[in-house]
Length: 135
Length: 135
DNA sequence: TAAAACTTGCAACATTATTGCAAATTTAGT
DNA sequence: ACTAAATTTGCAATAATGTTGCAAGTTTTA
Image (cartoon, rainbow over all chains, first blue to last red; front, top):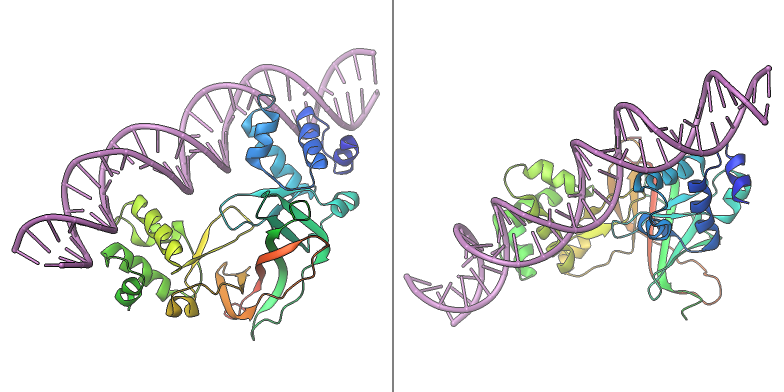
């Protein structure tokens, strides 16, 4: 499974990449760099984690999620990795209780009417509240 | 002007706070910590800038803007500072050309229909593209 | 104007991220 | 399966970013 995703994206299949990809496949929530480091522990160097995430973002295997604090979150979105390119026009949900960030793949970001002179290109939308598990 | 805002928020009127508030009033775009440091230069310590921004956020004079990269942006929004409390349910626009982030105070974030079990509380929305100045 | 309250700068420290280079691993060609 | 080429990793060094305690300085209050 992980091997396929890596091969499809023309990346060498290495232990580090498989392990990190596994992590994303196992969770449906988004992950912060720190989560990944906590999990991989002594297995790999911090630098490898940074570089792996960067590579995955470049290849479109994972995508960045904006946050209100300074943290960077990464998430693997189902459709995207199947198809090999990004469709990240979905809403992200941050649960105030469990603090997980979830990709709502089926909730499309609505278009908004911008003031005169503004031309839209890409949109991001995040909703916080209580998720289905915590309700 | 700056004195009034500070007083209204029960903050001591100091040179640092006035200078930083001036910066926000002069720009309509959002500012990163680094922008402020670049501007204030040797005038104040880094720590003072951090603490001033934190205080302003707590008082609701400025608000944080989420970004896709790891940067933290702050912006003063017109209505808010007049009234002394937050109405930050507006869309933020990031220009791909000049890279400015602008509060579209008149563009309200639309409501979206969430999947079963999810309860919304707060929303954020960012649109990138070309701004009115760069078109 | 003096005391109390608050703010600032400094120094030290913690965390997070980036880069170059050599060693190790993976891939591709035969 | 074996070797050369390409890629990836770990290490070390460095940079950038953010935090804390405390003493000195400034602002506010009465």
